[in-house]
Image (tube, rainbow, N blue to C red; front, side, top):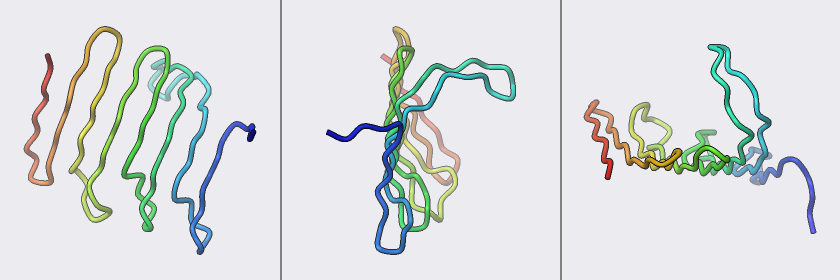
Length: 100
């Protein structure tokens, strides 16, 4: 058994390539409340967190980001409250959201 508040997996150069952490509840700089969240990140060799999986009592989601040289290519699958959605965006700015 391994117990702790966070886990990081590093590569041969000491760069964090995966992390699993429990983030405490808090308030953002804009005053928005956010719940305690468990977050798994898979990170590229250039430091981009390309895969994120998160869960809290309020929502769960999966985010897949494009390669390190992209800024706007991503997919977000989210279940929040009683609603769910799939949001996709590409580097050309095209975006599509699918809701049931």
